[in-house]
Length: 390
Image (cartoon, rainbow, N blue to C red; front, side, top):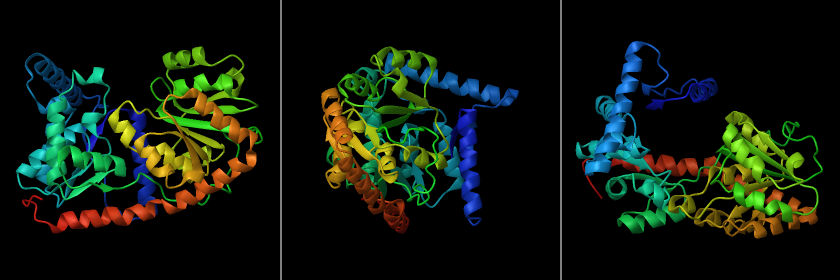
């Protein structure tokens, strides 16, 4: 259960659902939009306006009087709670800031609750952005769930350990955001992104192409990159960000930098596999971003790309175990980035070894290796009475 905002993303959800149903007719799950912001009839427009007014009022009350209301954490918190209370699931798993509040309320009412800390919400903002957020309240909600939920997941050992220390709680179970091996990649390398398969190609992707995502480091490194190299970026790139990007592209690189729109999930692995080196240039400034392992790191490995990753705690956790698959560099270090690129470009044999090692890593860390752990964690949670706390 959740919310629908954007028509394009709703279409993607529906395609995912249809794909799952076509693969396994026994699948009975469904997504229920508790709030659909796309609605055009007067009842839906009224609901949308009312929810937005409630959220604005909650922000004002917090800023002026430190009053804490569920709407402060996100749209639809009370609707989520009502749904869960009526549905009475054997195990309700929450994920989102609003979900933390829902989980706490359900737990107090005797429901069995799990939490998936995909992000460490109270540690996921720069200091300047924290002033307008109820960080103390979010920490309290996180602590309550971390201490009392028998189903508690984190995306890396680094984050799981840090959360356990911060909240004096059991260590969350680590489930890496890896994917099932796509055995069809090798035989489907059609040229969509690049027609030149000789010139080494760098690949970076995110939901949005813009500042604060490591591209500044890449652009600063390009003048020091030697030889012929292509740079391929994938993501939504609004006009303002495109202007920002092009203004920073060094002289002589405009015809070697390519921007690609996002593609459907089922196409992404094959598109990534067209390239040679994947860039995971995450920042260490924000604690949550430092501790997590980004999806892109695993997707590069699955597609057989050598990886250049900043030495965040989460990415270091993976590449220290599989050092042949990539290189770690200091965060925001353009010189180190250029040095690694130049090394692989000048030594294609070593680049080939790294790409082969990446394929082996993806086999070891495939989704099948994580699924059993997740199912076991759910089974443990379901075997414990809902009212019993650790």
